[in-house]
Length: 504
Image 1 (cartoon, helix red, strand yellow):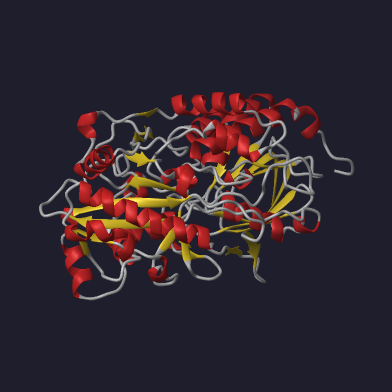
Image 2 (cartoon, one colour; image 1 turned 90 degrees about the vertical axis):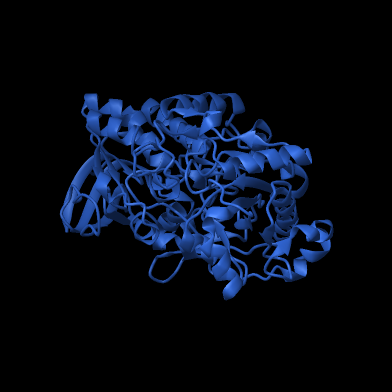
């Protein structure tokens, strides 16, 4: 086993890991050695091909199809240099005051986090797309929501010189998306931070990590040769995401002292809904996600968002098989799509565990309240589609594969809870949160308000696993703002934290 020594090791390179790496990089000038260990590859520019199955296999855990324990949901999580910031659409919202105050974390103030979020909105070029860059799929959604009298807002996105390829979820082939792979990580590397890709962290011991570097399936070769390594570090910052961060700490034995580790997982369960227009619309050209409707967030527990997905992803989100299924997909240029997000509250029983091999298991049950939210969201989406001029709507909780405009007045009786059958309806998630929740002590949480693991002064967490409850929005900007706080705390205590431990 090869041995390596660093002062600070960061596990993961996404929104959290990239932000921490950048914020700690000035310490390099003082002789501090910093490494980022990333499980996924660093793709070359020409390897962003836009081919759906190929890119899913390269950039996602389990090709974007990791199942929950009961196999009722799939989870889409990035696995690459830049983490999930490579494969999300770039939507960049700040957490609302009411959501943060609901968390009730001692020492975490809204004004502080809001200021840090603004810093990353600027750094990652977040802005509203110009009106002439909005395609029909998005425009029709906005106009329909306005016609219905529902509140609709435009998503700010982190793009530069966007060419409208519509491939955001497969990794932008034009380098437009300003994730950590374009902004924070390259800046950290220029300052001297070392990034090691294709590097899986197996466990964390007492200021040391056991890791395995694998031969690259795609992308550049890792900075280290394939093989097993023991990496010593005086500070460890875990940023592997809301599934893999708690799993790593659990298989490392921290669960015995932290009873809340892995618990309180939320997922924003999601449905992709489609409708067919009588004529082609611009949908898969242009940015896929420009608007959201929060009319029902407080009252019914769901958000509606514009989206546009690819043939395989769309196919698996349609109920059933056969001629109607095939006919709908054969006319993708006529499809309008809506993404429904259920705002699921955190419960202790929804959690991340590990199996006998140490692999992450997401033990999550879709509650009856989430199903009710989904049914109401499907009804609302059908009204949006028909208000937008769609001829036919595929409503998963309806007794028929397609609803037509003449069914509009009967939507509530045609879309019912009894028809919402888990396992038959495709539910997914791209927003895992929780598992290493912040709080006041080990009796109710895993870390303090600055991500320090209770009772382990050299160990920190800086990703969406810190969330005590659902963020209620796309979480990436909030992750970066929290990671900024974690890095600031490490810098402030660097002298003591980096002191050579007794016996070393």
